[in-house]
Image 1 (cartoon, one colour):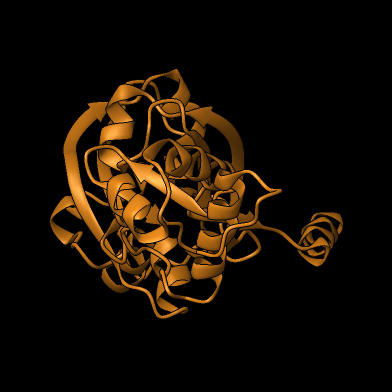
Image 2: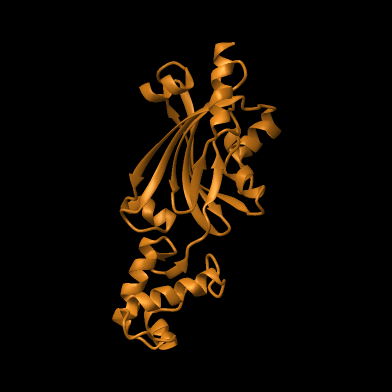
Amino acid sequence: MRLESNKPLYLQLEASIKHDIYSKKYKPGEKLPTEVELGKIYGVSKITVRKAMENLTKDFLVERIRGKGTFVSQKKEKIHLGENSGFNDSFVSKGHSTKYKILSAKYIKADSLLSEKLQISLNSPIIYIERLIWEDLAPVGIDKLYVSEHLYPDIITKLSLDRSLYQTLKEEYNINIQNSILEINGIVATIENSELLQCAIGDPLFQVEKVSYQASGIPIHYSSSIVRCDRISYVISINDYVCVNEKKET
């Protein structure tokens, strides 16, 4: 690295690593050398490296994963809110692979929230499924699904590691989602979900609550997802909003 006498070393190192990231010397998702190794590569102290890496982390160019090291941040994947599709459809269409790991699958009874969301009686049988969502070998979200047992009594046996809920409903039950209502809020990572998502405690996350409906207006499922906002962004266009309003008015 060519040094400039009138500029702090950590800023020069930061600029040099940025150049290496933008020039694809360090590719998205690639693990960076350790602080000691970077110090040797660029001829600076460990303290200088640390200050530069802190700035790069704040700029979301790199991310630190506890127990694994520092990685070049991957480009955020955009999920279009105007489409009735899930993670798998969005990722596969862009050449990525999505896998699901089932963390829990059990029968529960509908409480007041679930009975309202699914439009069923209190204490009605519910199938609860919690899954960890992986994109290209990295965890991006935790999905908690709730479906009415009388609609899909054997859905637990139908789910697979590489098939989304939407695909399962369409292929196994011939069910198509007509529309969905989403509510997105910002939360921070806890001890439990930071371990699953391989992020730091306190990192910002999206919490996405969704109810999907058939054309008849019957709720298909209710889900509550926690998503890494450094990996996922949600996009909506004004045309989507206009179309929804026009349908309601007709």
